[in-house]
Image 1 (spheres, rainbow, N blue to C red):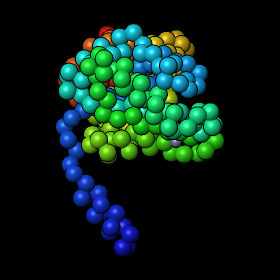
Image 2: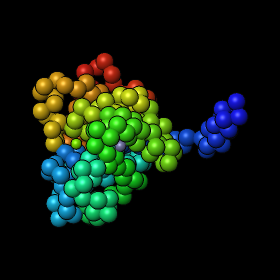
Image 3: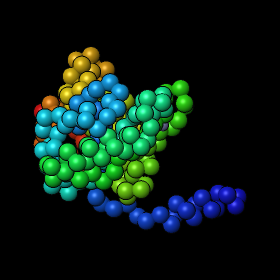
Length: 210
Ligand SMILES: [Mg+2]
Ligand SMILES: [Zn+2]
């Protein structure tokens, strides 16, 4: 009983959720050009419109956080220090477009590790929401693969598939059921005011809200 009591106390001591809403973004194929096991800062390239789209979301008052699976670390292809350099380059490129990220959360594990932070499992998104102070169910989760959409669905968030990266392929194969589909992050940003106005549940049941 003591354990239960102290757990409850910790939950109650947490500050209340703020009203600031967040966009949870995939990295490869969504913000930067997908490359298999990208391992050097020189290989980081923004997708066309990524900076402008994220800037538009930022200007609407939204927080921006990346949640990314990087099993190359767990496989030993490179270490976390190298990954930090890669993300330093990514932040540098985004800053040119006036975009600052609130955080980059990485699952470094392989599927065989059985962790709870590899997408589509929601461990990393839950951690980000606690540390940055947002409600996952009021977030917009954007990505190009089923694991991104399933991540959003696991926490009751609104989901958006971009057609960049593998997105168009998955849309054609109907392997995902996102709330929205957009060409890229610029078009995704155009859905945001409607998403904000619609409250928690996005436009489920109304096709792609077009
Ligand atoms: Mg991706
Ligand atoms: Zn993990």
